[in-house]
Image 1 (tube, helix red, strand yellow):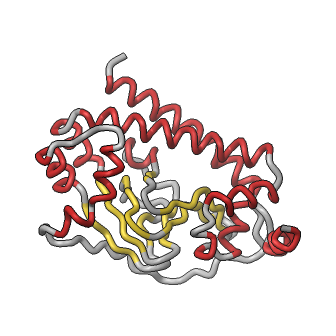
Image 2 (tube, rainbow, N blue to C red; image 1 turned 180 degrees about the vertical axis):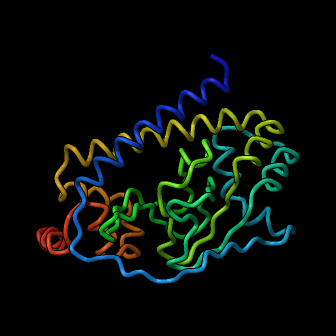
Length: 244
């Protein structure tokens, strides 16, 4: 199996797992509070190309070079094909059922990936933080309407790339194809673990594991978002916190 076929295989498996996880999570999540609709502006603030880019992008280079060293020329290709975006708290990187999808690497801040249900409630699928990758896989790779909302839950900075530029980047820096495979594998594991946790662990167990893993960020996540992620009501989350 060549590299391209290997990537496609990983992506297809990941799509299937994400579909199963989404169905399971939607069934398990109950919220008593309805979403308060409000208008929003999807602000994309690209920086001018200047010398400061290399400094701001350093975490991305470090992430890549933990696996594959890059020449300065290869790194310049990466910088040229990516875009720097600043988002304030409660601004969106991606809107559900839109035609705009990115793959992103978080430099600073935090995001929630969620589905807005027909009854106005949110089903939070993931939280994402610094030095983590985010992507709506099916929308990004198959040019379908987006499945999820991706929203900043604090002032954030993120590097994004679209599908066209990513394909060009693979041509210019072939070793990034192998890096991509590793990212897909990691996402695959995370989604499987999320599904297993929902099916087999109690809400209290998942809460304790979450605050242990993200102790430095737990104060950024309000009770509404956390109860949605855990699949419990606000009242039940309060009881869990008191018992812990």
